Length: 265
Image (cartoon, rainbow, N blue to C red; front, side, top):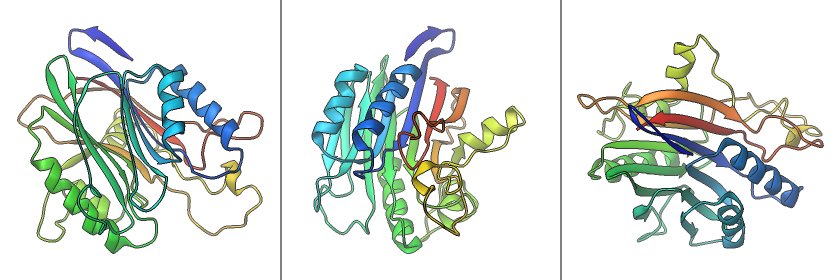
């Protein structure tokens, strides 16, 4: 959704790992589409996209104008970004190499009323922190070369907010002699409104785990972050919430919950 106000365009962003698994896949996809249409999102970053047909169905039924989709080099699954704004450039970390450490990254620029905005969609390795660390540093180097007004990074980081990845992104420590400074919009919004941050991978309440005994700790693995624009003006943060938690006929759209962020650009 895009609406005009004194600050500019109000833009809704969603990131969602949609779980490429056969369990209730068609039903879950329908729930996902209903949720996206309900939220009137303008920019959508998806992880674990099963195939091109899946993303084309989402584009058609949710009335997105633009789409970047690319499958991984070694399987049919891939990453996608859908947008109601023109997508100007795109890059993935497997464009020129297969040495991606089991991590997928897609970076695009979009044009919002003449302003270039960077959107980076990540799905980092689920198993090894070292793989995540290598690819996030490579990604930040690519992002730093973009000539844009604002940069957003979002997706499934497969790690907790007390991790090295998180501390690196939020400027609390360096990594491989690199430094950066991003703003965790969930943390900001929760502080503004005296709320608790919500988990996005919920081993106790998500239906995927109903018949599984696990000792994993639920966590906030899915983030939307803004590269600190100072001394430029900050976009105004209107909303940030976790979505897709409600069971409908016993299921949710995915084993992850999605994240929605609304900004005045």
